[in-house]
Amino acid sequence: MKLIILGAPGSGKGTSAAVLREKYSLAHISTGDLFRYNIKEQTPLGIEAKSYIDQGALVPDDVTIRMVEDRLSDPDCENGYILDGFPRNIKQAEALDEMLAKTGSAIDAVVYVVTDDDIIMDRVTTRRVCEKCGASFNVKYMPSKVEGVCDLCGGNTIQRSDDNEETVAKRLATYKENTQPLIDFYQARGLIVEGNNNVDAETCIKSIEDGLAALGLK
Image 1: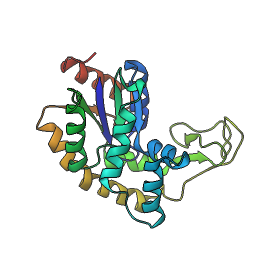
Image 2: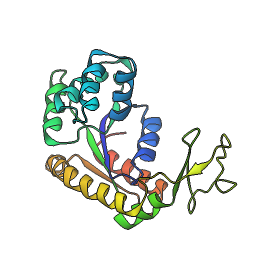
Image 3: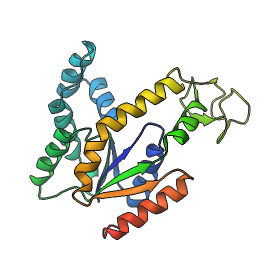
Image 4: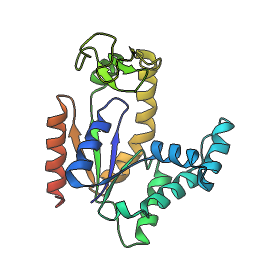
């Protein structure tokens, strides 16, 4: 099973991706993780990407595309994968089609985690993160046992500087502007499977599983 997962920041996309990865035994390919790995290991692609990042410039699509193509050749992708953070635009989506066509394969479905803006705003602005280990909590929905203290390592839990209403609103606007063309692109091909995450993660996953099954994917 070859999947793409889309979802706004704070939509619950990460949680859905983790569940799908386990349930269907998929490799989880996050472009954020890919960039960090390649830069840390100083691979040729990592060095090239870092040269743009150090200049404050966006990494060109072709560098990202080559990085993803290299990752898809790894053995753990043979039994399927879920792409998280790629493609981000139509050019990357078309490049992915060409990439997969070389091996006679194609994307099976595009999972779209749908969450209302007001719910995302509420969830993100009440999120707290451990300064020490990075564990995530929520003062309303999943609080730490002791307020301000991480359950896992005892570190301080804080609100990230970008988890405020103004920044979240800007991130949501940018996401919609960039992602709607992708949704339209894959919707036209009948590949969109929606997961509604307005209630809880279990409801969202169930709707995704039902959508995948309807496409003959189990």
